[in-house]
Each structure stands twice: as structure tokens, then as C-alpha cells.
Image (cartoon, rainbow, N blue to C red; front, side, top):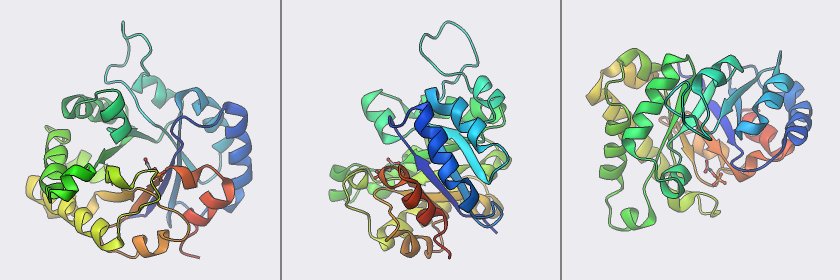
Length: 251
Ligand code: PGA
């Protein structure tokens, strides 16, 4: 059985004081993490505050990006080894904003996945097509290509633990959610791709989130789909009430 995972992706929002206040406002009302994992992925500058505030609660903590080297002459980068020392459970990699604005390639993302696994942090691997690809009906081919490239040389054991986030770019921050059927169709295709690359068991274990304008009013319908195991949520994760409504969608 896959445990659902609802993750906030704060992007470039919040400071350490706001982070502490947010966690204080949610930490006693979170679901048991065996039932639903509730996770916040925050900017690197807030992670110390996030980890301290979340200590002893059901809130999982994560980063939004990491470099693929633990240390060295890489000015401005974030070390996956230090993220692990700070207690990070998860790290988002390959978000479409990183691919688009910071020119991250599939090869970079593959190296980041390996570096995170080496440091015992679970990657949340993002994939998703542009509006142009969707309109040309090339979305499945595109996403399958991203997945194959990102998983290169990862073991079945690693992929069993992985979280994949399907985020169609045209649905991110636009208020235009993919329909639950569109989201399910792609999450199913991703699971089938994992089965082809590995085996049935790995495909049954990997958790697949949908992301793109998820909010408290559409989360239930999305989560009812058999291949959708969670959500990666931007805008609707920034307020405690909205985050709590998302993670407690089963109530
Ligand atoms: P959104 O962002 O929920 O604001 O659409 C999702 C994401 O980019 O992870």
C-alpha cells in the first residue's frame, strides 16, 4: 500500500520567522504520517527554521533543490550532504521552473537524484509537458522521455522509494488544473513506464503526485484516482488553513 503524500512547494516565498509561525499553526492538526504524509518543501534559507519547528511533529521536511556534489568550488549551490545533516526527508528536483529559468537538463536531474539517494534523502522528481506539447498531443512521449532520462542507472530499490510529481506546465500557478482524468491518465503512463524499466513491484511502490493548481476543493477528486498518490502544491500551501485542508482531505 502506498502512503499518500501531500507536499507544499513554497517556491521563493516565506522567511524563517514566517516558517516558524506556519509550522506552529499546523503541527498539532496534521494526519498521522502512516495515513497521509504531510510535507513542506521550503527555500534553503528557511530550512533550519523549518527543521527546528517541525521536530517531534508529523510534518516531514524538504528542500526545493540541491546540487549533485556534496562539496567543492560550486559558489551558490546547496549541498545534499548538508541537507541530510539538517534532517531533510525529501528534496524536489527538476521542477519546471528550474528547468526553464535555470536551464537544468535531464542529465543534471539524474545526477541530483543519485546524489540525494547517496545521502538518504528521497527525491521528488518533477516532470511535465508545456501547453505546446499538450496541444500537439505529444505529452506522453515527452514525459516518458523525461522519466527515462532522470532514472538512468537508478536501482529498482531506489525507484521503489522515489516520489514522482507530474506537473503539466500549463496548470502551474494558472488556476487551470488538469482534469482528474487527464492527471490520472499521465500518472498511469508514468507507472507503466516504471514497470517497463524495472518491474511490477517497483511500479506498485513508486508514489506519483499530481501538481498544478491543486487546492482544497479539487484535492479529493484528484486523490480518488488509483494512480494519483499525492499532490505537489504551490500557491495553496502557503497558508496554514489551506495546507491543513489539503493534508486532511480524507476527513
Ligand atoms: P501551484 O504550483 O500549485 O501554485 O500551481 C505547483 C508547483 O509548481 O509545484
